[in-house]
Image (cartoon, rainbow, N blue to C red; front, side, top):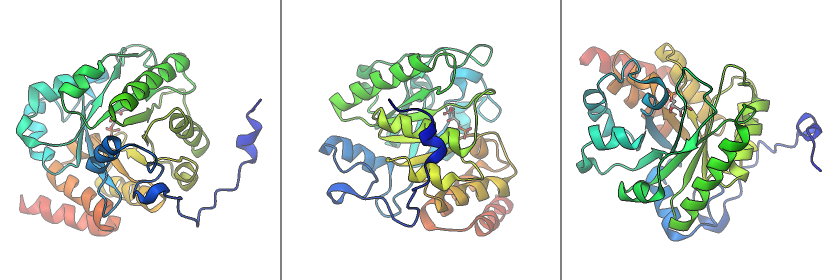
Length: 294
Ligand code: 5RP
């Protein structure tokens, strides 16, 4: 039976060897899927850069009216056209996003507890019928590895992946972080790898300053990073640059975009890193120029 000593000893990351891409499909770990799944993944990830800029504004599902998202109907439309994917709840989508935008949607499907309670106590709340009715390109399921309701959250992910496999809809496995959970490479690689092994087609996790390249190397599917709490713009852009440089396939960023002084300029600066290979300093110059012009 496997035990935890494998984690202590593992060291063969082959960081200089790019991931093997099966079947000639551009996206890591995704060559074995059917046409519909690949079509949806290709709406999420840009074939040229291999990356994606997802705009996360699902925070209200646990936090209520978060700063920057008090009025989603006003905050999101200027950003929506610049994002590759909108990650949100079905309530936000139906109430605030014009269907004419034709943007790929990653639908949050798990929920259950607010920030006032134990966050890992979640259920699958959105039926696959509604995911399809809303023409979603992916589903997001949060998994709380190491938390009180770990097994239940793994079951939630399994249910979502099973439904997604039936209809060709990819699942984004989201590694939760909590006050008592780690944020180091050892924890993040454990959680990310588990979600990929359960069948998530891509994984959202957090960046860590030490050893992030091992988190991406040991996860067999693409990783996108969450932004986390609002940082000074240069720090958020450096995090974004470092994550891409160390093997991430994009960002799924919320607060560091919509809580920036100029969210549109910040989203453009992030795009320049993710899709055009800009470095953090040039992206910051771009941000400041756009902000001053506005
Ligand atoms: C929590 C989430 C959040 O809903 C959100 O996507 C986080 O985005 P950010 O940290 O960039 O504000 O998925 O796990």
